[in-house]
Length: 620
Image (cartoon, rainbow, N blue to C red; front, side, top):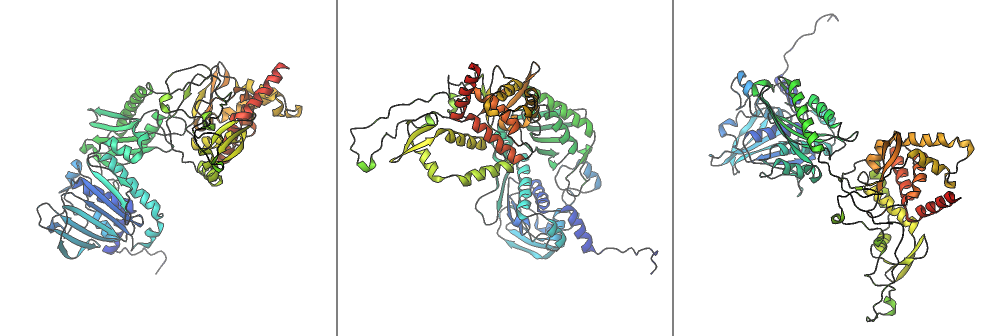
């Protein structure tokens, strides 16, 4: 045959055609689940249970208590383009159900082993049928069953090895299944959803049919976001749409945006709407942080084209730009109102907190007879070291402003998912001593020997502790535990960073030499370094910087312990070392060195020595 001869056009085998079509609709187990979930919801069920094995590849089973499938329909239910939702093409303009093409079960049967157990309300028994390549194999078998339908999909993509090899791990596929279940569970508050792994007693997703939307968000995404939600409603007669939903206020933010969008009750995505929402929140949230958004958009059915994507992941609708602009304006107004109600908690510091340690005489109970081997120097009810480094109860927190420091802000706790912090925490955990934990959890404070040393007793042994190293270690652990959630110790008046740097360079601890350059240039370098990382220092370590009358000032320090205020005379050297000792180039090293410098500055004894040396220099 000549190289220039045209190729022969052949009609593909029907099996090949069906498998190609199935690959467009069923791309992974989560797509199959989405199609079957929508069928169950169309069947007016009130409970859906999904069971999964090996990420849905070995087993994907969905059971509902809906209307079921008639026995006479089981013959054709898995054939392509068989549906109860459409009669002719014009019905597409007013389609109000999830499914309409009749491709879901047909597509699944071409790439998996499919079986259906169903029972209608009027039938005396249920019927089980099995399908392959869209055709019923054998005849439906009568058997006992509850009302509703149970669809079992086994060995998904067993005959499409290339697709099977391209999928992610079983864990990742299960996470995608869980995400689909979670999103549908939030939107369908009148339906109970359950997701579990085959052979395991626990459940991954669980909601009740009587739950509200907010109840489902609280159960699935946590109470932290649920208590910061505000209801969002908007209706427009001109463009014939209405939107309802729940959005997070300006007090809540996460690293990755959670965006749940349903258009006419279909789970879809809209890049344009997502970007417009991110633009609105950018004015209120810290840089790099995102909100939680759940929106249910209802548009006149005649204005929506749902038949533009095989998986119905995208839809087109008229006046899209105008509708998005309306939603953006309404959201802006809602956030402006919520921004006026931001709450910051403050806690009063005791005068001289962190400056002195009170030493009490130990008690003894002479009325008790104690064997010599069990003799203890003090009573277990006496004071302990944590008396002087105590975290106050929430009931002591008052919403009042006080001078110097003027306020202590307690932010809402947020979970840290940074791998660098998780690794640092793990290293600390591995290096910890169970003996030391037991010792400090049940110790009895005896008294201070000097600025650095203190006596405490555990069991019948007396120990001498270095309080400088002990408090430094404590502050390291607190900063790792509360990373990104530290309180703020407000400074009023706020000291200038440049002046603090100049003061620090005069201290012998700074080790300044003439060959290092002029102090003014070094002070400007300190200011520039801290300003360059201003947002990170504020977000993760509550070290706040602001411009006051043309001067860049420290307006807030990290609050490591309630009722504990470090000696502020150590602040100049702390500011200097933040620009010279912290490695800002590497994330993990940056966090580690920042924690080290903060703990070093705040520890009990070192700050007093810095204060003493500062006083000597100022007197000289």
